[in-house]
Length: 182
Image (cartoon, rainbow, N blue to C red):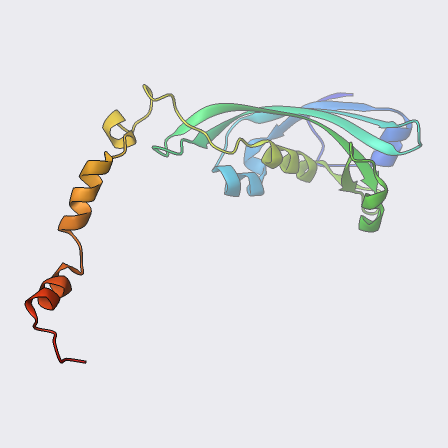
């Protein structure tokens, strides 16, 4: 079933029994936890979800999502566009204790009262798909090349000795001014 906007809640067991396929969009600005992790977003996430039952009788969801996010560069903090996509396999469970029974290939998804919140599922997968670190190309970054280069060791040693906070104590000690004082 192709929909323009993915429904927020579904009955996944019925969809799995009929081997339904949902495809649609989720507005990125409706995902508050994603905004906490990656900043405010605009646009949509394209989602494809295939509901089914595997050979062992487990109800599962095979999914794919794709979005373009504006993520801050870790050097200059100016956002840049980053394509994010994920393929995932979810095993439906009714109790968290049943998660241990799923094979390692399946991630558990909790179905409560035969309802599944698809927005939460999509948001979780997007957050898990975020890259660890995002940088502009050095030629496009708003931080200059000089700011990216660290000081040489010789320059660091000179500045460290010039700003030694204990230099005054060392001078007093060598002049004998501290003798006999406790």
